[in-house]
Length: 286
Image 1 (tube, rainbow, N blue to C red):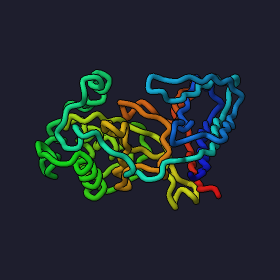
Image 2 (image 1 turned 180 degrees about the vertical axis):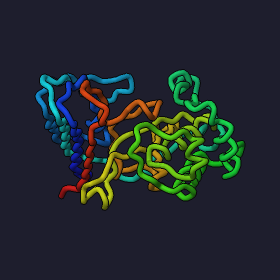
Image 3 (image 1 turned 90 degrees about the horizontal axis):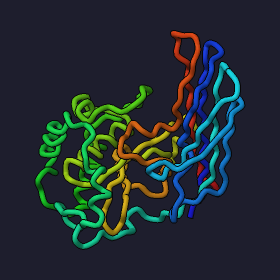
């Protein structure tokens, strides 16, 4: 077991006093047998009221209603977790799914169907052509080997580039440009898996790495694939790894654009947009 402290600060600086509409926060890590929250603290300004609920994916969502106008919005989340995931390879896949291609059991097929449907229909020919290029389309092999080859292909063949713009690039854009952010890599991975008939979903969260120990980092994103016998196993094409105790999941979704950490709107004089500052720090505790 290891203990990690995650500090996530988001600040919006407005050029005039504005009215803040309702905001949603996806900042609380997903708890389970492998992750337990030890402490959790939210510090928010201006004055607000808060409600919590679980969405359709069982993500923990905070809903904020602000009680006064402001020219600055500050949201600081500090969480200490206990992470019990030992080795990302410490699992076994059910016998029928050891080798690809395979078909999910009928008892799981209805629930997984939505995660097998591509979101970027117009990009399917480009994704299929790329899968053929790297030798993963219409080829039999061990299921985990296929996933690892896909993970490494994205990690090694594309140029990582941070992007401040909202949303994700389409898989076609990433293939054409040969570059993308972590969320773009994850989106390409997911769409490739869905082309192959594998159920996959998008994950937003945090990564513990030397750079995040110093702060000035950002949130992270990766993909998960449903593997019978294991369940949802994470693959991170940005770092070329299976996910383990360095990865802290906050939210999962079928659509990569549906789970930003902070979302909301405001009413005020324009046309100048606010300045947004984000700082993420993840530290290993003794």
